[in-house]
Structure formats: structure tokens, C-alpha cells
Image 1 (tube, rainbow over the protein chains, first blue to last red):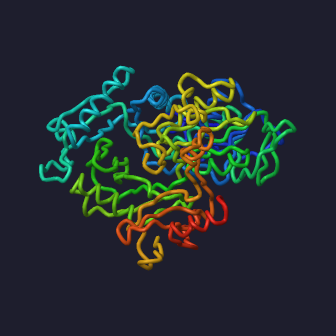
Image 2 (image 1 turned 120 degrees about the horizontal axis):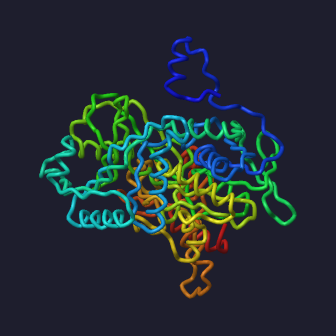
Image 3 (image 1 turned 60 degrees about the vertical axis):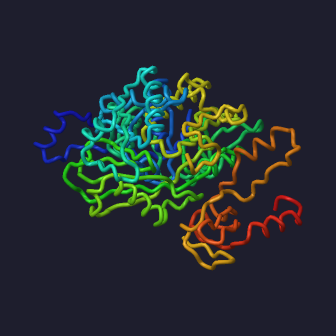
Length: 418
Length: 96
């Protein structure tokens, strides 16, 4: 397989670009593996770190469709680690650190751009809350800058500066190391890197049930391409987690909801950071091709349909117009829906399941993209060592029973509010 | 998505507020076993297919409804007044 470098680009340019090989193989499933990972989003990252960090290379990643066709490609490209609750803070910062070296690690340009993430505050109380969050981040070694109204508007000249704005900008908290990454590169990068380490990526292979031994332990999976046995099975299929977990007799504290995202027609450089509107829920960045990539809240009802409804489209765009009036006449070119695992406290689950041999990675709400490297890294650790790493030890299934939910927004167990 | 409110007729979903899983029943307040409370607070039905769920016609008649909606297609097959649906369930002896 070709190692990507400036030399391979030049060599292939001179020879008519006929020398490129496939980025990954398309193998037939073998009857047995050491580890099977279901889902090729966070699952690809998991397989890569299992092979790289733990030397477990007899691994298969199964996907029910094609690689990149699920949630891994349905993101708004934002990467950040501005979390304020113990457990989240350390985990997302570790994911951020992995992002920083990811292109070199994978030999694949994930186009990580540290352009800064601005969270706008619109009231003194919100500003105080951001100051507290910023302090918490800095105490944990994470960068955070608090800006008043004037400083914020200097950085973001396109944001509505009017005092008559229904929610005038009061200030902001910025994480400069945050930013964006190319929306699909993380899938291709992890797939290629995992494949090079010997991981089998098996597409169009839907898991329909688990294989169990007499003691009830999971010893493999039943798939649309026949049974495949494995010593350990990890599931990372956010959006559909509850359906598969139910087959193993586990009732996850998760609801599936649809979240829509949007891309505008390409325009000249305007939004050079990631900006979030704090009085509603709206986030926007601009892609390298010039399209404004933005989104808001989920539609707010259980759904597996991968498409949303128009009232939410109108709501999100209205918020965008309020925040950046200049985009009022920019046309929309793409819109899509993804199915989110909305957990009861807004925080993911990465742990051993109550069933031996089965490991769960679920509940990403709509924050899974930025977490991909950290999620895979921690899930691989948990599967390889049969115990959580320091960074994911609080992301248990038992935290609900023990009364230790990690509720970043303080919304309580109403999943579509997280 | 439009919901056929028994009082108001076919109305846009933006007039309604979502209330979630309608199969969940609060334990009796004298219940001291934590297990039913754990289930009530944190567990929900999440089927791919027909889902019985509460909707509140907030910007209409303000009645709570139980809507049966397919989560894979968003198709609505049944709408009933929540009061009637709950009474029907009580007379049939709890969970359907």
C-alpha cells in the first residue's frame, strides 16, 4: 500500500496517477476473530488503537452499509474540548490531543484546523458561567480565553453588533485550539491505517443477533453474511445502540433522535472561526470550499428516519440570520439528518456490558465527531484490558443506578434537551 | 409532519410539544424499592417502528395526546386523548 508523502504525490503526478493502490482491502469475513467491532465510525478508531496500542491485530470491523455512510460522515466538523464536568473534561481533552497529531499518526491528512471555537454569551449570568467553565478548563491545562463584548466583536466582525439585537452579544469564551477537521477524512484515515495493521473492514455486513455460549456470554455475532465468532465483541453503533443491546438483554438509557445539519452555497471567506449562538442553539463554521456548515438542536422526537422536518430547518436558519444578518440571502445547497444516541445525561457510555464478552460504546448525543480518536482509544483500552482507562472510567452504564450521572447541561433525564 | 388532533383536526407538528415515551408509568409514591424508580427515571422504549408517545397540543387546544407514530417513517397511525388512553390502560390492568 502506498505511503502518502510529497514524494508519492510527485511520483504519481509524473506517471499519470496510475500508481495509486486501494486505500484499504475488501476482504471476505473469516469465521473467527479475536475481536469484532460493530460499526465503522468510532469502531474504526477502536480497531486502529487495538492494533497499534495493544497489538491485537486479528480484528474485524463490521458495517451494515458502506464505510462512511453512517454517522461518521454526518457531522458538522467541529472539534473542541471545552467541557466543565469532571470526567468529560479529561476525556475530551485527550481526544483533542489525539486530533493534534492525527494526520501524522494516520499518514492521512485529516485537515485539522485550529481556528478557534467561540461560545457567545448574551447575558451577564451566561458570561459568569463561561468564566467558571474557562477557569475549570485552565485548571485542567486546557486553553480558554474570556472576551468581553468589544473584544468579541473585534474577533467576529460579521456577528450582529446591534444593541437592538433581541439577544445582544455580551461576551464570549474561546478555545483557540478548537476548530474543524475535514468531515470524512477521519473515516478514510482510520480505515486505511487500521487496514495497514491487518484489521479486516467488512462492509455490507449487518449484525442481526449475538452468538451466546451456554453461560450466556457473547462469543460472536450473527450477520447478514453468516455467523462470525470472536472472543470479544464491541458495539459502537450510536443511533441504533438500543436495538442491538436489546438482543443481548440490555436496556440502555438512550433514545434515538434525528439531528439535521446544513451546508450553504460556497461564499468568500467570512466565518473564520467556529461560532456558537448562546441564546438559542446554533453553531456555524465555514468549510475550505466556502460553504457555511451549520446546525442547531435535534428535531426533538424519537426517530430512525435520517431525515427531519421543516419547522426545525426554519428555526435553525432563523437563529443563524439573527446572529449573522449578512447570510440572510445565502442559499442552502445541502441538508441531511443523522440519528443520534441521546443518553439520559447527555454523556456517552464506554464500558464493559453486564454480559460477558460484550463491550458498549454508545450515547454520543450529537458530540461524537470530536470524540472519535478519544472514544476509539478508550474503547480499545477497555476491550484489551477488560477495565476502563482513567479517561473513561466515569462513562459507565451503572452511573445511572448509582446516582452519578454526568449532566453537562443540567437538563435532567429528558434526552432531547441535551 | 402533521398530527390529527381529536379536537382541532390535522395540525402542523410545530404546534405541538413532544412528551416522549407514553408507556412509562410512574411508580406509586409509596414505592420504596429503587428499581422501579430507576426504570421510571432512566429507561424508555426506543423502537424502530410504531412508538406510543405523548404530544402536547401547546399552541392549540392544550390537550395531551397519545400518538402512535412509526419512528422509521414518521407515519402516524393513531391519535388518542391521553386521558382516554390512560383510562383504557388502567381498565386493562396496567401495561399493554
